[in-house]
Image (cartoon, rainbow, N blue to C red):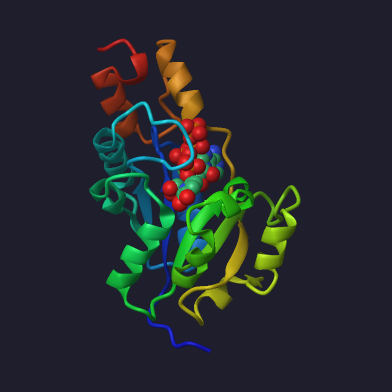
Length: 221
Ligand SMILES: Nc1ncnc2c1ncn2[C@@H]1O[C@H](COP(=O)(O)OP(=O)(O)OP(=O)(O)O)[C@@H](O)[C@H]1O
Ligand SMILES: O=C(O)c1ccc[n+]([C@@H]2O[C@H](COP(=O)([O-])O)[C@@H](O)[C@H]2O)c1
């Protein structure tokens, strides 16, 4: 067994166009449930597998900073803003691993839909060399079946408890239940484009900054 140093650090990547409580609440649950020292929200500059976001990366990141300002343990990691080209997770994990050193447990959190698409990610088989993967689920199961290729890859890596993520720096996969709030960034953008309030779906400072600036077509105050 490898040696480890310190409580795990986790990353939750996303487009955050914009950030909302559907991101924040699971992040807090991961922080507590996995006994993390911190959870880093990582906004992608150029999301690899989806259309370009509506807001530029600086604005999305500014809103994220407002969202986590008073939440202990949640921080914004801006490393993907510094890189040109698609914001590949393999590059992000490699960079953070270099910073943390070889022994610190590192986790990358993703939804079960994202996990099912993992074989389409850039250099996907190298991700678990740098980090554990934590697949956030409703109720702790993986939902729809996995492809045979992914199921075969998963079998020797899957663990059943958060404790197992502390005894080695990387390489394990945990399915971990978190709340899924009925909030999406798509829904927030739609409301604002219709001139309707999205207050209550994200921390007030985020809503107020978006409303003041007239983002997503919301009528400027
Ligand atoms: N309501 C939610 N509950 C739990 N996890 C969520 C929720 N919304 C998003 N996530 C997760 O947060 C991460 C970042 O999500 P993302 O930035 O794509 O937000 P989104 O609301 O799904 O965006 P969009 O509606 O634009 O697709 C992803 O891993 C995603 O699965
Ligand atoms: O590296 C890849 O090829 C890759 C492909 C698809 C998604 N991701 C990452 O998965 C995270 C969630 O992405 P999204 O677009 O569903 O919010 C985010 O950190 C993305 O960079 C990464």
